[in-house]
Image (cartoon, rainbow, N blue to C red; front, side, top):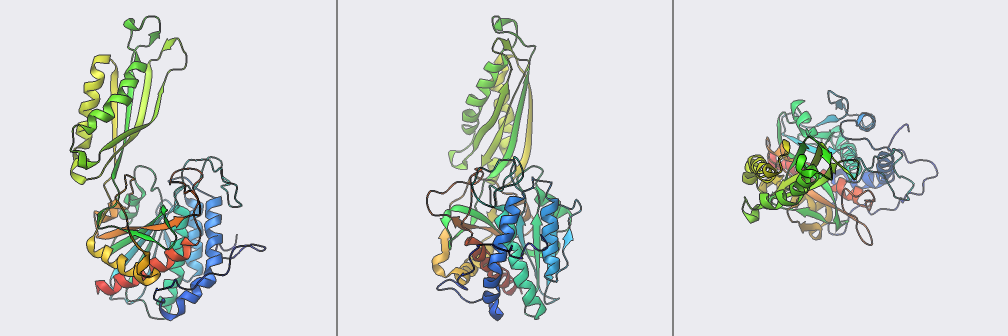
Length: 419
């Protein structure tokens, strides 16, 4: 496609969209009208990205699309060193502050079962977390803010970050930071799709809004043997069973209950034959915890409990504990900016309280360096909603212009507040 923001010929995408929700404030310089004109093209962009997903660390075509579209808008984006992410500054008043807006662009290793025209064309890869929407929203924001900058109406600099590898470890946010993505930034903001909220609602929360998340892998080895004589070997299937059933419960008993520690194994494997005790077994999962202090203690606690549980089995244990990401902890002032921006973009009825989630988000690493906040963008569809990370996940595309208006208002208010 020549331009991702060019509506495909013969498309039946909706072209009748309200320029501004009831109770909202208009964007400056008739940007609402420009956004309304852009909506069909933005939806086409989202569908193109959804149809052509790329796994974490491999987002080269997605980054190229983003780079091309921002360049066509008159901006000067730059690729990250690996070529799978983009940073783009929108330059306004030169002595103004720098505000960053982040979108993640990677997909998940899942097959797409949806019966839609924009179903994934890549076997075993699917945008099941809404990152296609995040990317599209931020492209729309870039187009509108570029117009303001051209007219001399942008009161500082806005940095757009299109980040790779949010779904894996090591986190892509660390690559962005290393590449200078936070240089001179005073505040940073992001949105994440939330299917539990309807379109037109934005979930906000001061303090932790996600959990810390780490990866835990335990490999067991032994001599192997015959299932008729387990006493002559090490029964790794029995050891694996103890690991996945006893360790999660015992770990949670070593910390305060309100820390919300949750260890869940998502993979376990051992053996290939019904009458052979295997010589290798493995289990892997995630540890999630709601507070930072418990997160700091978690590696030591898990290691001790694993050793205690498996010692009687005689198995040789290799524990790999991979630190992932701390909780996303929203700054109170940044949430104040998002609250005002939500009211302006959607009206006061658009503001919704949201609970802390057990999901992890590597946006947290940015907040280790500068204050900021993550908001939840309502994308709920009519009928039963499908949760994130399920292959059949999809969004109500009316959330795209909502997200654009929200993040434009956020950028303008953040710049004004930081002067």
